[in-house]
Length: 329
Length: 281
Image 1 (cartoon, rainbow over the protein chains, first blue to last red):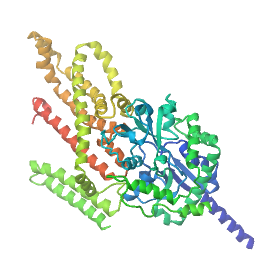
Image 2 (image 1 turned 180 degrees about the vertical axis):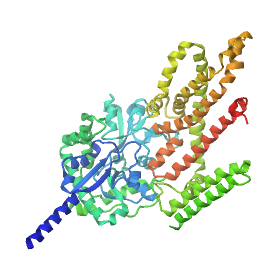
Image 3 (image 1 turned 60 degrees about the vertical axis):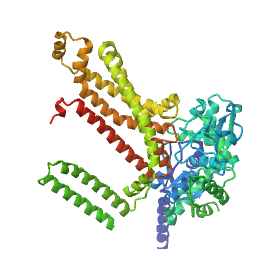
Image 4 (image 1 turned 180 degrees about the horizontal axis):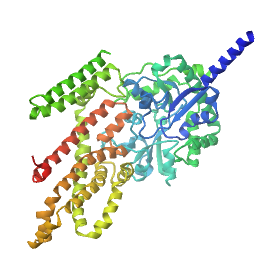
């Protein structure tokens, strides 16, 4: 009888773990499959998610996919998003909460032609600058307002802003003196186009003191009161961070994994390996837990948005250590 | 739940009212004919408002009409600036250039057979090019401002207009042409007095198709690079900022502008082709 009971318990336990193995998590990426998201692909490929009993689906993003909208529509459980866009969404009534922050530093910068006579941020006045919109313009706007430069058009104290597509042509064609680039992606596209780094001047947002947090993991606030969801996210964050640290240590292998997962086949090996190297610099120093000081800095940058601030008041409850505390200890 | 119930009531009331009007004694009067679609439209908006509020649909999925209306009223200067940039500068200039160029080309195609045989198939090919492919290239060629949008519109309207005009110019029957010849009419006399008037219904068909194409082209082209102005710019950036009320306000502007533009061309058609069977009665 006792044996039978324990057998039943074991069978129940098996069934329970089988049910756990079927825990599905859908992750929406901010952009197309590339080494920027290596940690997640590595965790999936190396079986880190499986070890935690998760079945993770990774949805690539793209130029016309707003991760905030996907998660609002119930298309994903958790999304990779930049903090400015997430906080703006929060203020618009979509309560996103940062549960983990694998990226410590910002990879965003402005890349300019040196021969246009630009050497300091002051020289940006009266020029044409390319900026990404779709929620990515916020850091730029706050930077300009901190410099006291208007973005209404070319003038003694203003710049003309172009809505730049997600390529580097405006710079190469000299339609713009400067364009937005990421240290790990577009900058190298410019270099690959045959431009020598000596010909360029770059302003990293980190160095200008206007860096905002990029690539964090966000979920809907209401889900955090659901114990099963929280448990799932703890395992997800733990496995993802394991993936990130593995990717940092084995950049070439991580790049290979990303390439295997790129269904479009658009990425090249050289580009992805280089990107992984640059990404590793941004994730270095983060164990996955959000540093409240970084959050404060991001909020202050966004609040300083001049006449058209990104957010109008300090957000409350926009991040939590609930998940990372449980996941990382 | 009460609001959802109200929505159902409103739907039934609108239905009842319209069916009463349609089967009533004044069904054929001008007033009822204007009233019926108006009631239908208002009912739809009313149901939309009540359902969105009753079911607490988040703003980012579908904003209520009242929210859109408030945003519309608050952003009139922005909407106007976007309208001027996209519709007046981009769409209209592209439309005029494209249609005139296509009309002149159609006359040449009609006159010389080698053009008709050689150019029209290529024309169909170009007309099938996707805008997402051509727009970035044209932005590269003509810059970020409205000129590149006008160029996209030219490409989009040119071939529908060309094909329609060419078909129209062959509309006059050989009997009619023979008659003109017995009058010893020159090519241009025959063209102006017979073939061009006969082509008018076709030409206006092309012009009407092109109105909507022009608006779509100008707005979508702005997704691929624009100054910080214009309807396409506003729509794409507002989606990223989750200002869906702003997106809908721009959609309202686009819908109003598109309807007015189409209506204007259809009105001119009515005057010009008063003799055509489709315009009688």
